[in-house]
Image (tube, rainbow, N blue to C red; front, top):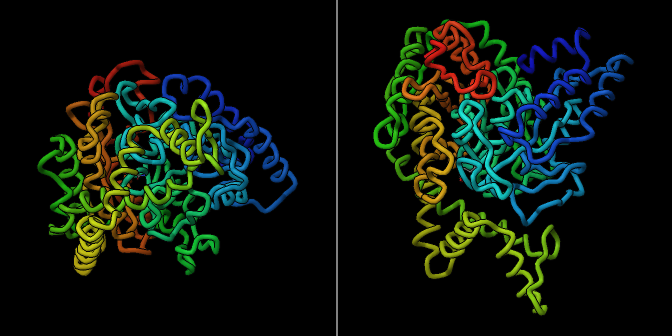
Length: 508
Ligand code: GLN
């Protein structure tokens, strides 16, 4: 069931939240030993569901998703569950408060199922940098589920949760969405509060929804989004209903008048898998056949976005991670024979951080150092401005930009873990939106013919136009499904049908 369908069944009392929650807990018990999407399962989930059932029985006015279970990426603080951000340095840490998106989930009556696995401090594209072991892709357990939010995406793809929260600094919602056949949205920067989201790079981070349909993502975005005085970068203006935008999209099939730009720099060539390019061309054809005008857009600075990102992100991360000093949070390691406060901090950070985190702290500290600041961090900020200008020029000509969400399907576990550069190149298509603060969405665009694994298409809109993504995302989702003849992504083949491939099942 989609979250929207489950919500309807809850309203009509066909099913109770307690039964739905129990079904998800059973599914987690059955498949999570293989998938490892969760770091922690909420032992209070059933009790929370029963409270919602009682309130519904009492006639309380409940929100549209009340009683629907949801998984939460372990980067978000939860007052009743450990929050590790995938790191040993926070092992066992229980925050004193809820992150705003989590508080809003609870307020809206959603039932937190647990915390999902992620690359340590959200650095990575595969969850292999989690200190607690990788998550596996439900479509093929030998493949990565993307990252850093691979846990949330895999949980939704494996039917271990109908909805999940993620965070996206350079693609960590969209790239896992692409490779697991799920829907994910990085909202406009400032659209969802960052309060209580453990910071990776504060000028890039956004919390957002992970779901199986565009409407489900919209419903969740409506719950978590909107102004929060506790986040000084939160946009104070009111937002339209994203669910309404998605429902409007579901009524349409004529796209006459819509102008769509294919970003040349993000849509093929070096590093792109042939099957991804093929599905993308077919998706563009679908849009044209529905009446949209498609033009090619040049965004020359996007070619440098990844280089700029990998200076800006480590710079901000090295600063944000300085707070993990053994004094206030989590782990404390005292060297043999004692030592000074600095010795304790050094020993703690040496033991508590994994190799990718250390790599980025060193890179960022170097890029910010007095002698190199202008050459590296300063230049990267200039490129960031150019990327923003390329978006502005593009959105003078078109309403939406589109590209594949990731250059390849899910790669094998172990393939890139020791090759940071190969890992970074994955983010080619998603990073520009973070640098410019514009919203981006991934929706499944079928399976790649070579390997039968999911591929995603990315839609991007101007800042604050998230509703446009939901409206046209819903249209495109329907067009794609009609072209497949069924919701072919409504299953997790490697879990439910053994190793039988999608090709054998005749759906490729
Ligand atoms: N893969 C990107 C990185 O490693 C994405 C991170 C993110 O969005 N949290 O930086």
